[in-house]
Length: 532
Image (cartoon, rainbow, N blue to C red):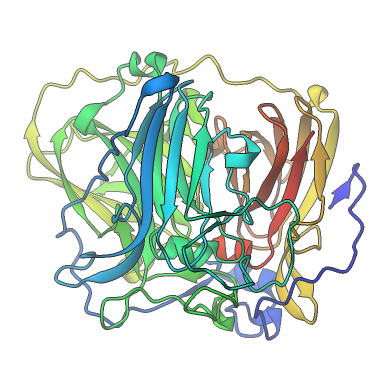
C-alpha cells in the first residue's frame, strides 16, 4: 500500500502458501503472463469447470422467488429472526437432487424484508460440519456484527485446533462462539438490496459455492412513494454459475473437499472458479411469466468469479432498455438507461424493464454478452397478458445522495491489486501483502473523507465494508454510465486504475476491504481497515 500514507511494515507473517503452487504465469492461461493473457481474453478471469451430468434445455424451469423469512419477534423496536445453517438437498437440475449447505434449507436462503432505521437481529445457528461467519454485504453494521473472517461460529463437536483454517495464524482479536451468534444490523441506511453470505477466512469461495448466500431488502416510505413497479412486478434475481458432477452434486476444485484445514483450489483455477450452468435464484436458465408491463429487476451477481454483460433482447433481436434506478447502495439521483449492463461479482443493479411493447406470447431473453455456449443465456421472460400498468420511473429518484468533493478529502491513498509471490508460492495481494488478521493495514478517522486510487492487474471487483463510495474516475477519465450512484463494489478491469471517494462514517472498529472474486479473496486479497 502506497501513496501519501506510509506503507505498513513488511514483517514476516506465518501465513502459509495456501496450496497455491506452480508458476503464476499459468493462472489458467498456460504459461502466459496474466496481464498479456487477459488482454487477449478480456472477459475472463478464471477457468471453467464442466458439468458431467446431462443439463436441461434453457427456459424450461420456472423462476423460483426466494421465500420471505418471518420474524420470530418484533418487540423492543427491533425485528428478530432465526436462521439455521444446515445441510440439505434440493432439486436444482430437473429430476436430480443436489447436496447443499444452506440457510434454512434453501438456496438462495430466505429473503429478509426490513425497514430503514429499524434494527434487525438475526440469530444464526451453525449445524454445518465446519465453522462459519455471516457478513451482510453492503450493510452499515457495527464491527462486532460485520462478519470479520475470524469471528467464527463453531459447530458442536468441533475440536480441530486449526479453527481459522490452514494458515497457521492466531488472531488475538477474534471473537469465537459455539453453535449460535446474534448479528445486529441497525439498517440506518438508504433503501437497497443487500445480501448475506459466509465470510469464513480462507473458505469463503467454496462456502458460497455450496449455497451459503441470501438476500436482504431495505425499504422506506420515500422509495415506496415513487411509483416504481412493486409487488409481483418486483423480482429479486440472484445470478450465479455452478457446475455439477455426474451424480448431481456440485463440483468445486478445493484442495480440501471437507473445507476443514487446507484452503485453496487446484492450480488451473487460481484466477477464479467458473461454472458452466447459469442459475437464477437457484434454477438453471429459468423462465418467468410476466405481464406486458414494467418490471423492477433487482439483480445480484452472486457468482464467485464470473462477470456478466446483461442485455434484454426479444426473439426477433430487438433490445429492450435496461433503465437503472439503483446501485449497490440504493437509488440513483436520476435514471440511467443502458442497452447492456456489465456486472462483476457482488455488484447489484436495480433496473426497470418495460415489456409493454412485446406481443402476448412473445419472449424476452436476458443474455450474457460475455458468455459463450450455454453461459450466454441467463433466463427468459414470456409475456402472458396485456394489463393496465400505473407504475412509473420518475425523472428524479432521490435527493439524499451524499455529496463529497475532492477538496473534502483529508488524504489520498493508493492500493494495488495484483498477483504476487508469498513464501515461495503464489497468491493475490493488496499492496504486495497477503491478508493477515493480526496486521493493521489502514487506519482512518471516523467521519474523514478520503480518495482511494485502486490499480488492478486482472479483473478485481473491489468491495469496501461499512461504507458506500462514489466513483470519481477510471483511468483518468470520467466514470462510466454504470458507475452512477453510491456503490460498495467497483469492478476494475485488467490493467485499469480507478479513483473512489468516501466518508468513513457510521461506526468505529475493525473492518475489511478486499477483492470479491471469492478465490482471490481466499488466497490473500483482503486488507484490514481500522476506523478510530
